[in-house]
Length: 340
Image (cartoon, rainbow, N blue to C red; front, side):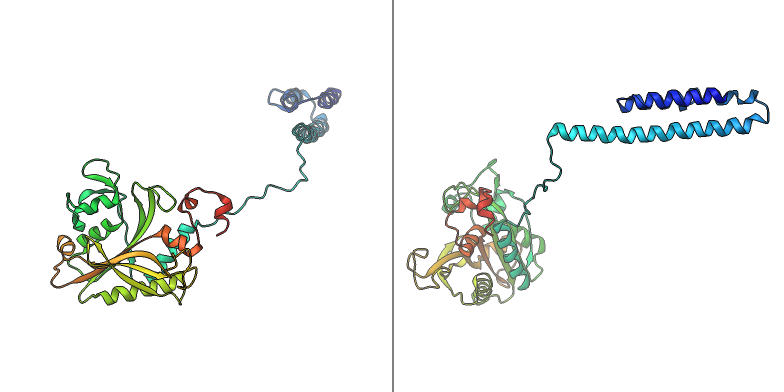
C-alpha cells in the first residue's frame, strides 16, 4: 500500500506539471483528492491492514495528500499569474501609466444665483413655497385678475395643453395657492422659485426659464416696505453701493405697479453700452397686491394689504456675471461653465 500511495503522488505531480489550464488542475484535484478519488479509494482499504501498519500507512497517506494539495495550490497560483500577464500583454496595457483624471463638477451659475436669492430672502424672514409646473388656467391667469378676454394674456404667449391646462408662464400661481391655503391667517411671507415656460427663443429669451416671485401679506403693509425689501436684496446681490429706482408700470395683479432698476453693474451708473448710456438696468417687476386678487384668495382687502415682486433668475445671473447671451446658460459647454 505504501508503494501505491507513492505512485499516486508521482502521477499527480507529473500531471500537474503538464497542466495548461485551471480547468485541468481542477480535474486533477477531483481525480486524486475527491470523494471518489484515487487517494480516497486507497485510504478506504486501510481496514485490511494490521493494527501495527495502520499508523505508518496513515502518516504516509497524510504526507501524500499534503504534498498533492501544496503542489495544486502552487500550480494554481502560477497559472493564474501567467494568465493575467498574458491578458495584460494582449491588451497592450501599461499598468505604470497614471490613471485617468476625472474633473470635479461644480454648481451651474443659475443654481448659484438661485440659492443666493433664496438665502437673502430667508434672511429677511421669507419662506420658500413650491407649486406645479403644469398649472390650471384659473391659477395662472383668472385668480391673478386676468380673465379669459384680458389682453395682457397675449404678453405671455402661453403653452396650452388643453383649454384649461397649461405650462405655467410665471410662478405667481404659487402665491395664489399659498394664500388660499393660509387665508385668513397672517402674516404670509414667501418666495416661489421655479421653472416657467413661454414661447420665446432668442439671445435674451428662452422657452424655459427660471423665476423667483415673492409675496408678503399682512396688516398695514405699504409700498415703503416693498422698496425697503428690494433695496436690501439689490445691495446683497450686487454690492452695497447699488442704488435702485422704481418706475411706474402696469401688471393686472398689482396696483400700483412698478419696474425696478438698479444702477448699472458695469459702469456704476455713469453710462455705458450695457445700460444704453442711461446708468440703469431693469431687474424685476413689483407692486402692491391688487385688492381683487386678495379677495379671490380669501382675504379681506379692507383689512390687509400685500406686496409682490417677480424676477427672472437668468436676468440676474447675466447681470451678475456679465453674460451677454442667455443661450450660453443652456448649452452645457464646459468651456463656459468652468469660468464660474
